[in-house]
Length: 207
Image 1 (tube, rainbow, N blue to C red):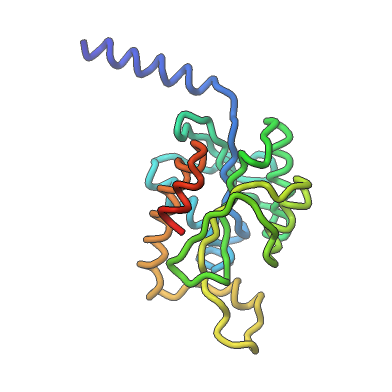
Image 2 (cartoon, helix red, strand yellow):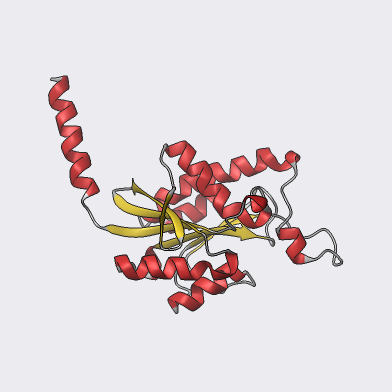
């Protein structure tokens, strides 16, 4: 009987893998090693956490991004880490969306937000760029702001004199690691809800 069950699993896996990609989940950041662990790379970090938790990789090079595929809530998703640098994030997402004919409402973007404290997250169905250059690029390239997003709090700069670029390109201090892991865990729980169309439920749970 065990052999039959294994065969069923293989058949199910094969059938699922042949389904078309219908969703994109993108984490924003900058690709170079010098940017690892910085506030602006919170989107990269969140997807890295999700990959480790779900045991899959985002390592294949395509669409000017590192990509990987995973079935989430019955949907075949393309996970993306754009390598175009933050200000041109929309180029990679546009190319993937055009190739797979994915509408904006099926593109989930995860990124940093200085208006939220570390350990906070906010889920939105659509909206303006809010001054975030990565989101600005995506809105421009898709000609739409109607894509869901998860904002990860990285904290406001400590004083008006601090340069904003220096702040977002600065690294998280060690004492914030626990709060970051908590929010990354919540992001991991929110992804399948949003992909399955339960964005309001995810927002009610995690906002």
